[in-house]
Amino acid sequence: MFGPALAALLVRLIRREGFADAGLRLVGRGRTGAARMYLAAYFVPPILLAVGIGLALLTGIQHWAFSENLQASAHAIVNTLARQGQALPPGYSAEQLALINIVVSTALAFTLGLLFNMIFTFGEEFGWRGYLLPRLAPLGGIYAAIITGVIWGLWHAPLILLDSYNYPGHPWLGIGVMVLFTVSLSVIFTWLRFRSGSIWPSTLAHAAINAQAGFGILLLSHVDSLIAVPIGIIGLIPMIAFAIWLAATGRLKPEPDNVTIPASMIEAANT
Image (cartoon, rainbow, N blue to C red; front, side):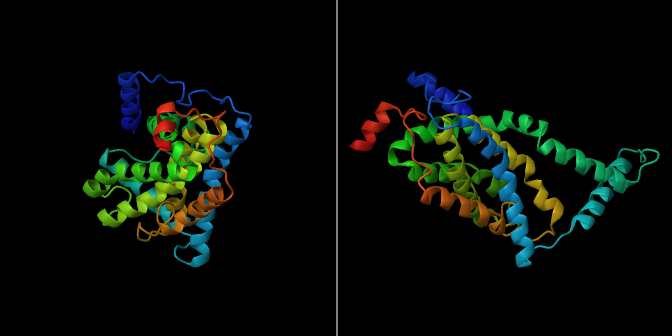
């Protein structure tokens, strides 16, 4: 995940571009309330994931399967302990341990887990929203967001092809769905980046998606990965709808006070 950051760092150093446009400030120089963008970064991802879960249940594509998944987790705990030659702790059943694990994981996914995940999502955001997006901004916010999202999605292609990353059994279709996922997120993260003038809200939102995506797997029955919540088609519908609303309502326009666009890119866009 630090590949984009390393690439952006090397290019900045080689071209002596500096870091003024990297969005490293917690709050940009613009007038838009950045605090609202941090709140949006914290609350929008779980809301979209929750809507995806609700949509899966309403359409019947997936059904509620928390009990079954809890039992599967308990079974995995027993097997893991058995392989290590250990027994269950006195006074605890496998189901209790599995439930404790879920409760702790859920709490972490909304607190310290976000901070930990931000270490890694910064590695991507410093490259995608800290370098690439401002240089595409002269094309317009919508085009910049889409192009960044396509590149971001294709960046995952080797993992999907070689290791069935996120989409087991679907190496080629998986790339297409991944691109849909990253383009929709790219639009949302572009909104956070442009309105705040900082990469930290998008870093937070990216961390939230990574930390909380497992809720769909935990709560719902398992179906084909191309369809399932959180990053199959049914899970992407709320994200795509929200992204379209952001674009349609003009919320992706780069604000000069919040986003520093390199002069060379402005000249290139005008030629």
